[in-house]
Length: 417
Image (cartoon, rainbow, N blue to C red; front, side, top):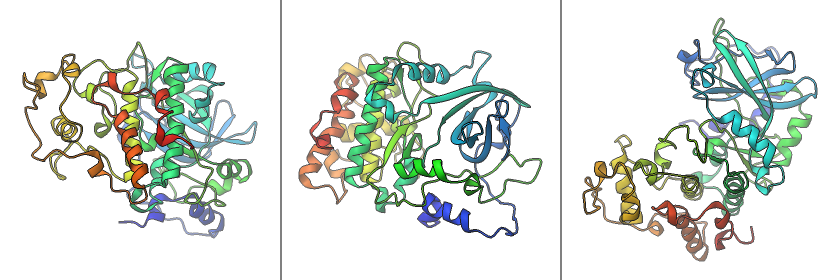
């Protein structure tokens, strides 16, 4: 296993390495780059981007690669008009057109128009600009955002046991609840549907200062891309300020990003949503779902930040693949029997439950409480009780009993944050 510093590639070490490396270093082509699917560089797929490419009639120049997803690649770019860094998200050509449109652009445009005065706006990565680009694989919608620091998933790896400090967890929890309240209550537009650490980005005053002050050559890729003609394929690089130790910073804030799978309240992109192990019970059971799926999703992520592991992994044994049956069995073992109020409105009930509401396939493990699962030694016993109550409010099996984001901002565990 690689050491933490190498895995994370934190800005503290990454930028220092870039700034101090010898200019005459011999280039060695990388092996084993594992990024987006190479097969998707085809008509309808990804646009081949190379370092130095310029977009939108000379406005944005690509400096480095920040990341990728199923439907996009994301690049650090410089706005040559303002001399400011931005994140440039280039969607696959099949993301729009021929009836395949996602709601991402429409949602981002609505958010831009409606959330400016909301406290949650500071925790949503809003759209700065948009344009279209014609390439060899089709027409690509391109979205421009504020340049941010690393993903929350990377920040976690800086801490023992993947557990964030409790004060930081409380702060991040409040920020993300403000973001959800903004989406659900202020806008009344969207369910986010994909809350996970890799969709939560970090910022701080030091990171913002870095993007204001550091020259473009500081962000030059550490490793070269593949040789031509595949020199569009390269490793991603996430950065933080070399002047800040994120493990000690008290100024970390977060933003939700990537609305590629989000939906409107009254118009859903798909019925099958969320990452497997973070999926809400009403989604698995085929019951109607709403914005409360985001609350369930966030509750599991907050638990993961505090405990360093998931509540549910949806497997019968560590070597087994995920199954909905195992997932429901684990929910029952920890949260108790499924309420009839939920089962009665579930299209998939008969796949998993008998007429009495018992699971057709049970987990051969005794029932356990959430308290038994909570092992974080840094949470005091008095604080642990409030923490567990907070999580339980977010993962009620029946979404009608689950508190909404605005109500959760007032719980005891988040007071004095």
